Image (spheres, rainbow, N blue to C red):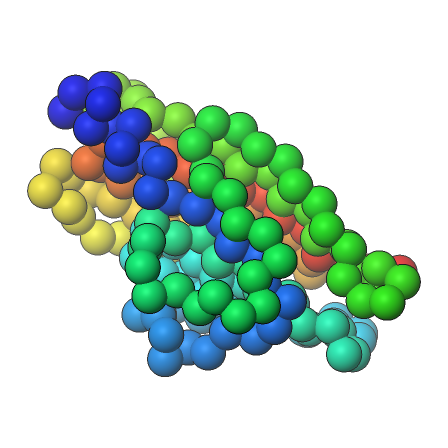
Length: 181
């Protein structure tokens, strides 16, 4: 695959942040996990090549969607949307006095076939050892995977995701924290 085709594939990935719940019927869920701690609940939905996180605490509901889908996405309630290419950091407060803070870091890489396959194997092993949600599939270029790892703490939840797409050697990593006062 040439560099322009890899860049085009990578540039279709985006993060969308919503200030409302999104409904499961809008997506093809592969796996799902919910964690609850004290006043908050965080649910992770693993999709083919993407994920959705829903964080709720009191009147605050926030959703993070990482997807390569370019059309048919909900437009209502979008707080922010940005492409995943490169490296990005983003932070947003929810609630009247920022009762909930959302922080994310997004990193993307395009790897050669050998490096991609080694990274794929390493991250699958990590996903299995950490009991993360793991969805394996294949595209026309080889093995792919989406991995979602969630850790719940007293005042925050940490979520790491890894989306590996063989077509283009794409590795997309996100680290997201929802924290509350």
